[in-house]
Image (cartoon, rainbow, N blue to C red; front, top):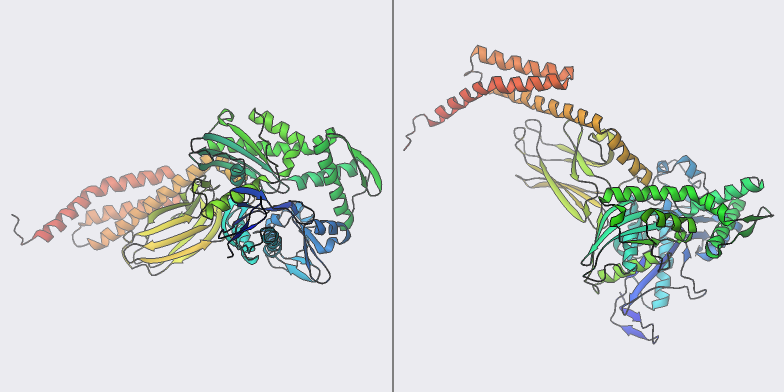
Length: 617
């Protein structure tokens, strides 16, 4: 790439300096920033000097792509050729969108019966990845125009609860825009960098990052020590933000002033923009704001906006409580609270955050710019210019595989630091087994049927041996972007297979919360089920070994001994069929106690045979 940068003081162009840009690809607005000569700044538009790029796309009659403020104006005049909030769709299938969300004009552009979302603009259809790449391409062009050099590398931020599919889709969008995405970074982690917390290698601090943007909410608890950012916990909602407040404000105004809800897309968009204008006006001026709805003059007070905002703010505080609980800390342990995202300008938000954490939140940075600035700091680190910082993130749900009886065997527990690599050894359950299906699951329940299936593959060419002899190592690797790679390796033959999991379907934060709640609610039930399955597995193993023992030693065993083992095997089978844990445990204990003497006798015989005719010195 062209290694050229601009000197902001003199305006001259410097050579031999690479620039990696940081991009905040937002639901409502997007920004691009960079670090040049040690100065991190958000890049402005050359025409209007604005840093915010509305994440809106308009396709004109000639198929020309228009991004940003100009596209925003087309929401009213050409709504069918304009789209917004595409970030809410990236990495998802149509089935992942709730019925209430499908009522929004963004989502009802789907064409065909395929599961993949495709949105129609003019005469063509586009995937969310393609549409997101248009915004990224626009930001790339802005950076190239301002810095007078070719840009090929970037760091892109995403909400902390984006799953593998959403992260990979974001990376794909960057690639489509001509960018080598060096890192996908969680937005709250980037924001903390922007605030400069952790730059002092001697600083030790615990920070809460409250990030309420246009379309998503995230709360992260970070521990910063010696320049290392350790995310202790995260929580949030991928379907909560300023857009939702705008929609509710529209409904409130319609109800208050008796205005008929419009079915016309053009009129609905006009009302949403008017509601957004009123919301911002009240937030900035703290006085009632007037507007025009369906040619009717209206006025909304500060208290009325607070009333509309309250339910959404309460949802964010619930997430804050969960994040504190997951971190293992108390509110008193939080040293500082950072506010990020344009929606944190709302007074009810700031009041609620102050009340919950018991301290004034830090608002020293422009809330819209913090994430982009942090992305640029991380970009500077990855470019090799900053070696004093290290970022660690966590995985929000446990990851594991299905084992015998449908049990979930966790390999990477929830809230483990990433990047991370963990491995565990397994074996076959049948003699001569040459294949093993590896099914990967995500969740907190003991049985895989209650968790989310991510992927599966079959381990082939296992050397045929007796059950339990082959050693198969299953390893999970989560890279810094949160992408999971699963490998299975037979250690004797070195046969190996792997899969990179790019989940087809996304999991919303509400689903993550439900999975956690379910694991708590069903804890006792799950323990009982797991106990039964463990007992059945143990009994089945004894049955297998008992039958093999009878077959192998039929010439040495007396009729009474053979009958004893046969009866015990029958008892195990009967107990399994009965399904009573106590009965199975009793049958297991009886088998172990009554066969111990027979097993010792057979072992002595085998040792005697092996030593026959040999001299022992």
